[in-house]
Image (cartoon, rainbow, N blue to C red; front, side, top):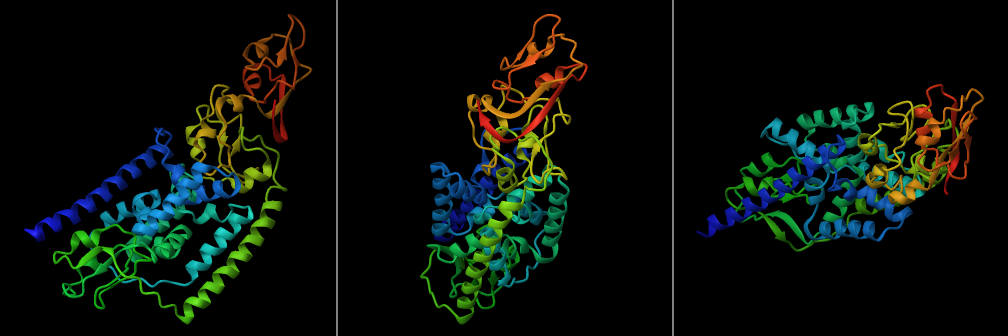
Length: 431
């Protein structure tokens, strides 16, 4: 009876974890396709929270970031199997792969160097490395049909069939940080050596290759806390709970620690230089309200493209040869920024586009317009201008008051003879 009760409890824990992951995965898919986003699941992604905490201090971001760290200290890397959409996608493909004998994976030292360099550059002021290795960004950019996102996702998902969750255990900088914290977690997955028969069933279930069933050891640093091993062990030899911490640093750990701090410092220096020079050579573009200026947007935007998929007029476009981050192209969609919309401000998880209220957005100047000589004085531009910046008298050429114009582009989109030019501004301002 006790055996059945314990088995049922373990199975329920696994089902709860799987259910939460399914909900998060579904919400993430709906979000990146621009279908549903009242539950802002992308706002609890680790790196986005870290950037908003460091550069745009927000109490909510701090609390969420600390919450993830505390939960990891208590229970281990549940973030990777339950909250990270890219991790959930990989788990889905693991189900397709089926149950096979999973080989133990090494804990490669280079992952610490990748993480320290990536986060060093981020703290230094540039997100350029994050765009190419951060899991949420890869996931979101892939579903927005970004070429790099698609290629990276295909490579990682293909890797599952040969090296299981190698990206999560040895490449992902978020996984590396949380894995290190997980080594110190209060609750761990471990093997009861008296009950274990070394059948290898737990290792067969493990997607991260963190179980050495012959020596009856589980590496909780690379363990993703998917709980499949608990569900698969019929002898109840695999347990999840408090286990005494045995801290015995080796010479290799000391050298690794020194290397991590060296790469963190190098990354920080590189980040400072990148932040200063990244946007200097780009062509002039118009940025969404809240982006502030070229330098900030170029260095803070993750290129997750979430804002692009939710823009109602489809004027936001992906990074290109003109600009290395999301920007506005009035010719791409309906031709203007909707005055009653601040979707991009609400959605941006990284803080690259500030979380402006609708009223703040409506008073943020993102561009300027000028009436050309071929204006015939039809007056349509003055009728559609949401801020009343264009004045017109019957039969006369329209006149723009740029102290009221916010550069939304609605007048340009509605001018049948293309008699209005729109100009970029280097830095956004409040009017």
